[in-house]
Image 1 (tube, helix red, strand yellow):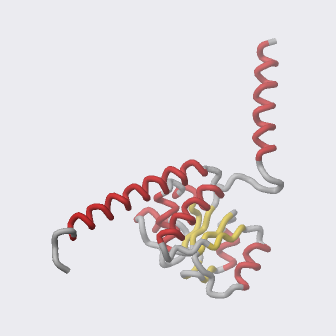
Image 2 (tube, rainbow, N blue to C red; image 1 turned 90 degrees about the vertical axis):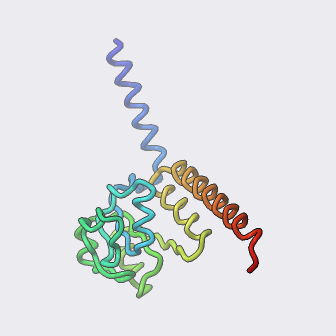
Length: 165
């Protein structure tokens, strides 16, 4: 009897997990990044193992060099992209806006995440973690980065406080 109860509990837990996914949405396990800054962010947030494609400009951290290059910065090779079976493509910009539609028609979600300012970088981190199903990771990382930034600002202000400019 206990065996059947356990099986029923496991079934309900799995079913509840499936219900929490939006229609047609699967957990993200295959990411492509067309931007060096986003590639670095993927690794910084702990999602490097999900990276299956990168731009030829992405060369840091060193382990990214083993990931399949799928085109240039903002310019994917659609055939290669299709071959890596990505679920999500991260980019700060696409050279040709029509790429976005072609990529989405392949069933790949395009996330345009500009990173030209501090706020945009924090938003990109939060969105990436949300898409990966780990929003708390994003909140913790953003909080840590904000604390580090605050400390640096205080140190800088303290350094310059008694110096002529």
